[in-house]
Length: 136
Image (cartoon, rainbow, N blue to C red; front, side, top):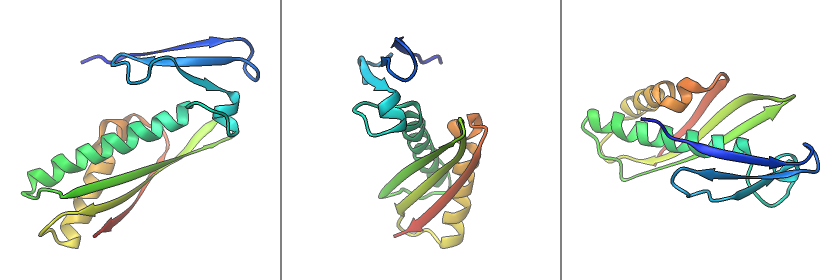
């Protein structure tokens, strides 16, 4: 399987602007700029997209891990916070709230760790990954 996205940038780094388009066109010429990346400008940025990818990948992987253990999650809600410092992503922190009927805390914690380590986005990131998980 191969997926793709395209970035177009016009002008200098600080005053230029660009747009991103994904193969699915979920992002279709979505704007990004220095302001949307480093300040509070309108548009997206690479770190936000990594956060979305990591949250989505981890959450789906966790659903599969729980299913293999015989549990069906009622809800899994994950927020991902990406920390960028000195031009390097230094941390991806996953914050999970889960409602999984019948699971013990020990089983839940093991499933969360499995998903954290084994989702494809986690495997592709060269940074510290942490998870805070709450079983509701």
